[in-house]
Image 1 (spheres, rainbow, N blue to C red):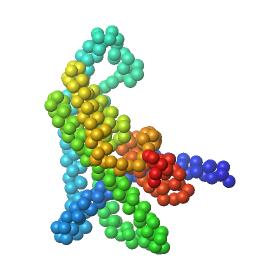
Image 2 (cartoon, rainbow, N blue to C red):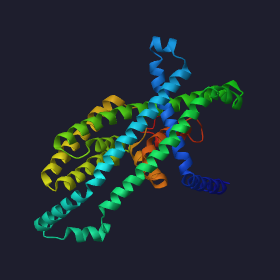
Image 3 (spheres, rainbow, N blue to C red):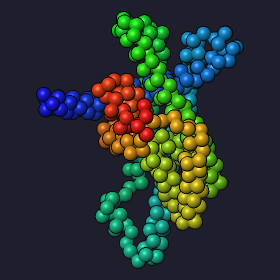
Image 4 (cartoon, rainbow, N blue to C red):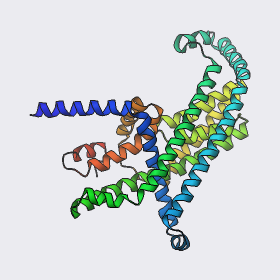
Length: 342
């Protein structure tokens, strides 16, 4: 019987992974829409604490206003990124010359052939192809943004009917209250994480923008936005948010001095924000083991790529909350938690 259960579990897991991979284009935008919806509900709950807004603005009016603001923000960010990437694309020939100069300096200093080593391990590096892929990624992001916004709108429309449907699914009062508490826990935990993490990343992005602007790095807005996004990825994102602008700084100036200044400045800023400011702002808002966070990052990154890395923490938080509500899966929740407390 145990062997049958184990075999059934493996089959279910395999089918789930296949479904996640094949349904990525449908599932991922929906998950992002849910996260945005949870964040908006969090903001709405804060705004409703203001007597004037709670009294004079019905919930549907607040939903329309928040949806409009989200759409405007995404549109502004999309155009801003398009302009900055276009500036980078026009300058890639200059950057290519600087790369040649830097490699020659490295060849002289270390007495090695850097380009030969790069070709052995990374093949021929082409800046044109690099920026072409960036444009393709930007177009894909804009297309997904439209889909996400459509999902958000329809979730808002469905929001008013959800309690009635939930009551119909669970007619018994005890079951209904249990599911309602579970949903509220998920909403509170995920919304708190997204809201606080967004605030921390925004502070980090503003500091990075100021540093890059002072050093004179091209398109500092683009790199600051990249820092903002990458910091949603646990551990690896923090490292990449420092290394990518630093590497670009070397390519832009063709000199090591600005590169070292960028590395030290951004590294210090990220360390202070990540290790001092973030714990004070977020506290113990997440109950995830660091080892589990790394495994989740690798797992969802394998299934959904970079998008999966962004979603790894929220999905793991939801899994811990859901697993903790059932006797058979509670041990799994304990293993996933930080200190074994649910």
